[in-house]
Image 1 (spheres, rainbow, N blue to C red):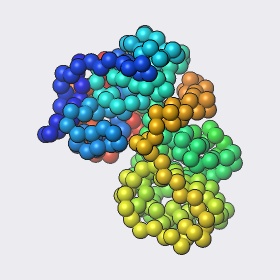
Image 2 (cartoon, helix red, strand yellow):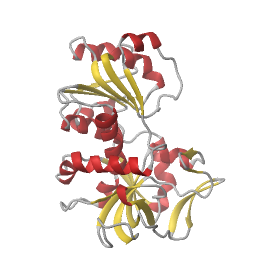
Image 3 (cartoon, one colour):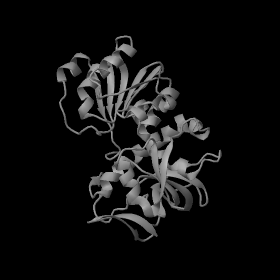
Image 4 (cartoon, helix red, strand yellow):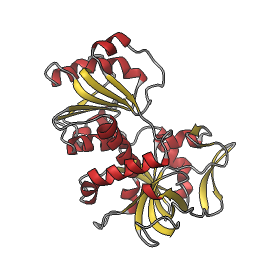
Length: 324
């Protein structure tokens, strides 16, 4: 089969062996793949959790038809239309653990639409609801809201009952679109007074919950924008992995600062995250209430060009590979 493989000189489309499912795995005939920021690092030869380096097949989320199932799989069968997260997705066939595989709604969702969803749904439901403890009526700030994961985060926050959702983007064109995807207010974190804008929007108290995909460059302003006993969930580090941190303000406000990643979770933990996504969100996924915009589609043979397009950061929403 064809796959996008990391080599010492870059990523190339190569012929590799078709994988065989283990007892708890599903083999999927891939029709479409969603691109994510972590794919850029893997394609460049870096490690991401347990994967990385020469010989790695890139890709974290995909949609297609079930080709075969392991002996421990009972909720899907060959021929079913599914979406999934996993490794080695930029390929004609990909494996996924049974707990990460979801049946597509019967509403006619396309494979391209489905391929945009697995990572965003699990990342943001976990960050907002499980780690962040979002309660109905609370206020939320999503840092890096114009990314696919950020756009989904704003929608999930609204769905779960947030009274006010604030989204950040440093790009004026993308920032103007945030209110179409769940934001009540959009802010520019390059503006020195953005934390004061958040405080003003929350009647001088600050937000209950910040889901931060930016980190270092906004860390101290996040502390200012959060209310006393607020929570900050560190999801990503687009603005840097290391930076200054006002420990005194953190302590004074008694803020809970929570780090999350899928890289150090067990198979059982990830299965539970996916179960909770189906429990809380699948009705809204099925009706199309939770969805992401597709900025542009590329073919599998154009995987390198697709990653370069995403790296240029000119897109809004998701970039997708069409495999079939």
